[in-house]
Length: 155
Length: 306
Image 1 (spheres, rainbow over the protein chains, first blue to last red):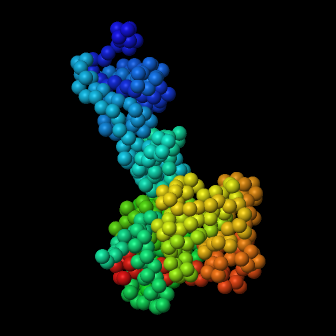
Image 2: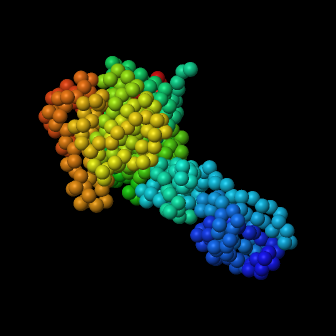
């Protein structure tokens, strides 16, 4: 069985594997990381069987490693994801993403009348809130409105 | 421990602790007894009103004059470099080099917080769109404490537009620090947003929602009326549906408690009938007057003069 799985998507020699992405968030992760615009080989899977989550999605990107800012982006849309860095077919680093406490610059405030949307060069700044139901909201430092996950727009 | 608010901008009422709020109210009480105090001694306060305002601007400018200060600024952006496309950051940086303190009203939400981060002098938010209006909240708290003798354990009835009314949101947040009980009276379309209601829940305080105002009146210490604001409705039809939802008339106060007082941030349209004005429980005009003392107290404390 293990061998058959290997055949579905081959291992990468160098690069990053983003695993345990909620199945319906794979395309969003591809987009926010700009993987639809890179020249590197990118493999992805959706609705893949997962012992932990039932189904999951994954992305493998050859010859690319991500920055901490990218980890924050992934954390916002796929808080269950783990990120594995590969070098010469070996895992050199594996970590689960954590929800950042605050995020700056990377997400737009949904409020069109917020100073970050009305004035040039006012970077966005949010506190990340997780409510009792596990929904993520971004509380704007400036206009004090909450941007919900369904309104997330990355800059 | 002594409380100092020197150089602290006031952008949102939650920037101040309950102790700091009470400190400002104590100082406002002193200004009510003795409004003319030449503490500013010629210092310059910038009054930047990017949108029109009557009460807030005039009461700030009165407060500055009573304190012996000078005012520079504008009451609309007409003829200023803002109209030429100058950024808020540039306007604030320039004004901060002229004045000791900036008072700003701006329709853009979050503009006051941003201005306070750009400015080298403290900023007082005189209203940033639908977001915050903390000096109104301060004068509301002053009026409540003055008429009730305390801020603790009061029953506050909030009436009208609880959805868009920023003064309501700030007042709820502030009164949650003082063990208040809330009666929320609004049309279904204009209920208090859940994010504001959460403050009440977080403190385990009691609240009741009513659609009939008369049910809440007999047990209220404060009836806080609000105008249903036409400008907050994207759809004029929605406004027409709810605009006359609540009108307080004098006869409705017959069963109110002796200590009950009616407050309103003003301007009113028709939500308080003029026959209430002569009732000693009508407090909205004194409330507006208290705005001068509350603003004197804020200016003096933020400049470290009290």
